[in-house]
Length: 440
Ligand SMILES: *Cc1c(COP(=O)(O)O)cnc(C)c1O
Image (cartoon, rainbow, N blue to C red; front, side, top):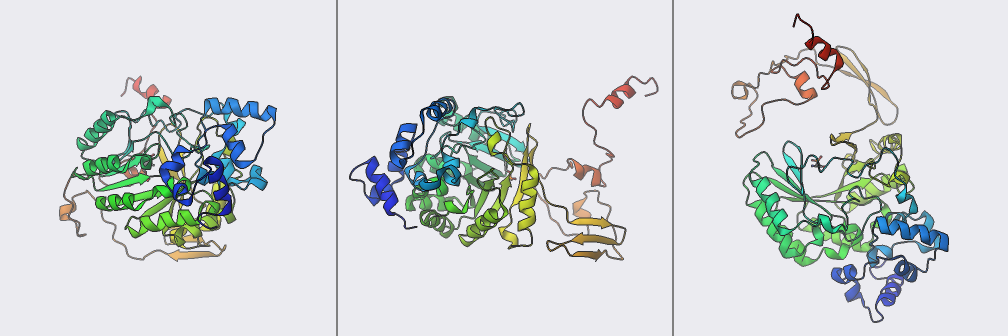
């Protein structure tokens, strides 16, 4: 596809009679002319819904707002829109109004693990920092649907300052993940200010930005933006391509600019029913991503957010996709498939099984082709009893600073320096009975 093809030209002229490529490629023009109503959508695409469907769509839009950039709209295959992966991610579906009993407003409990508004501090050494509540496009499968476009959630400069204070006062935070909304909906200057403040914090070692603009608004990646970002290395960017159809000439141009600026690029896809729940589509996607210097990072199982049941696949579909990727294509093209634990447990990786069996001297494995093989364990291996006295260890590891000493979770059970022999859920009934035991 050319950067400005006839179809895009037609849409541009319907929006503004004299529109030229200059305007089309101006991201602010794109935002100003984002499609926010069903009527605009009908006018620009020529797709028309009958009265019954329209009435359902109206009810949907009242609950979950619509916003599509003219650019992303131009990627819809109008002839076959009902099957179209771009249409399905961008346009209303009345099934969004169906809320199943397992679904939640905040399935990941981001607001529970939130020391102050806008910050989710779930993992020991990194935080999620929501600095914007708007996006170029409102993805229909958004996990933060509860917040998008809601004026109650606009992070004010005051709130962002408080977030920065929290990070400043929390020395274990070495990685800050800016998200939203989309941080690239902020102005260059405002984002520059946030990045400068973060960089000045000595314990912040890396900054990450999560943005879908390379997919939905690639013109946002301007030379000015990239020149500003370059000042803030080490800066990593994760984007969100879900389907090979989204990797257009414009998207490639945006990715090239970011990669040329030395920014490592990752991609987080969401596994979506009838959009990309297919091993061939996913393989094509990851291969096209690496060709554009984007490392596939995660495939997410679709969260239990309200109104997403029509997008959800069984977990087995994700495992099947991983089976079709691991070994079948370049290792660095294979993302990690994760389920973000409902209730706030964080991301849990899920994979097919490769270890089939083992004894004390052999591990039996199978590969992607179905070959079953054995790995001979070493005859002599002197197990080191580790008491975490790293200064006196034969391995040279000069750790300075405040690495936490205590192991967590299964790590604790494996360790020599912690006496824990089992992990027991809180309020375990058997242990409660013991408490009543007079012998104890
Ligand atoms: C995903 C996520 C992170 C980052 O996790 P990584 O696995 O390091 O990419 C951090 N905080 C929260 C709350 C997250 O959801």
